[in-house]
Image 1 (cartoon, one colour):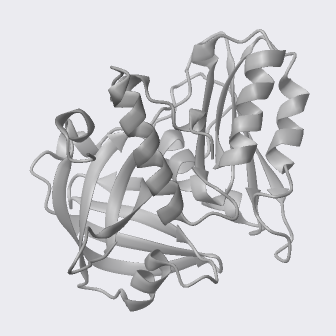
Image 2 (cartoon, rainbow, N blue to C red; image 1 turned 120 degrees about the horizontal axis):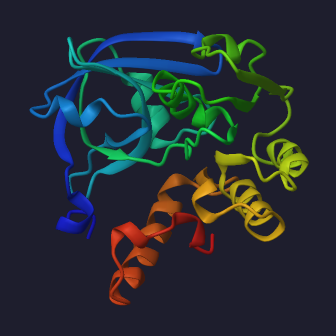
Length: 274
């Protein structure tokens, strides 16, 4: 079903060859890879998602995972992808353990994900955890001149904000989580978001754990006067649920969505009841 025209529109199925591996922070591995794209213009917009085939299976479909392109260099046709490390031996972590310079991997993309609703009269307020930092980085690379903002980052890395592009009028705030504390369970982003629920001069963008993302969306949808276009929220992962299980639920939900005569453009991942 994910290969249908509706889902594959403007996507490439291409190969990436790793050219560099670095560890900008203890909890993050950064991969740089050259992609054999024939449509480089597709890769120049902010907040692009790709699906990496992290494990090939002889008797079934490959296992894939979705990641955000941190940046793209059109002169070298290289992209950067950040992996947040975790202890579980997931397919992505197993692939990462074996990856080295020269390793090749197939990917599908890029799929544009939403950016903030940049409006001259409104301040952009962003909420993100570690998994969304590449998206924040990409958006900041394409930040619209003159727009002011407040960016809240939850992370166990004390210096994570130092890695982000800076702009006049855009303030960054670290919500530091101690390393023994589990990501996605503290509600740190939601607590800060509650301080903004009565503001009418803002545009909200958020990406984090699904339950917290859903709570942030509900907060602004039901308890503020913001328009729907000023509330752009995504859930990247689900605490206590593997990405494989989440993908299966997503496929089933998307199938029902199509059976109701709807399209990809009207599909909202956060409406999925998991």
